[in-house]
Image 1 (cartoon, one colour):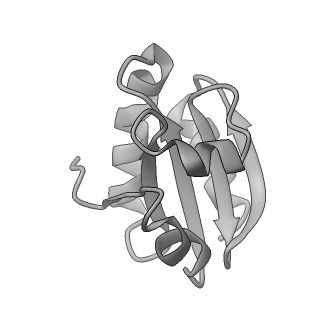
Image 2 (tube, one colour):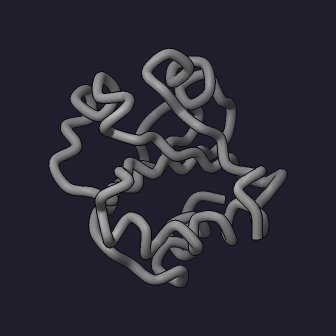
Amino acid sequence: MSKNNIIRVTDVNFAAEVLGFDGIFLLDFWADWCGPCLAIAPHIESLADEYMGKIKIGKLNIDLDSEVAARFEIRAIPTLILFKNGKIVDRVSGNMSKIVIENLIKKYI
């Protein structure tokens, strides 16, 4: 498991990395102080490795990059938004198992 396959998404690179990506992009909205965010982080890292080459996975820290979080009305974290070809196709919030996240991904690949 590594963080190497996870893209750090920011207010600056969001449009190019996520909206400009032709494929499936799972974006994790999180914060350092969020217990459930830290709980799902290993699942996100594992799935980034397992699905490398099939989808892209990124993380956006809402405390450092609040413009994108505000744009998508992130009210609870963690929130995962799944984009396909730059369009939102699904969205879930809260602490969840790796199976739940993986099933979300599998619905769109």
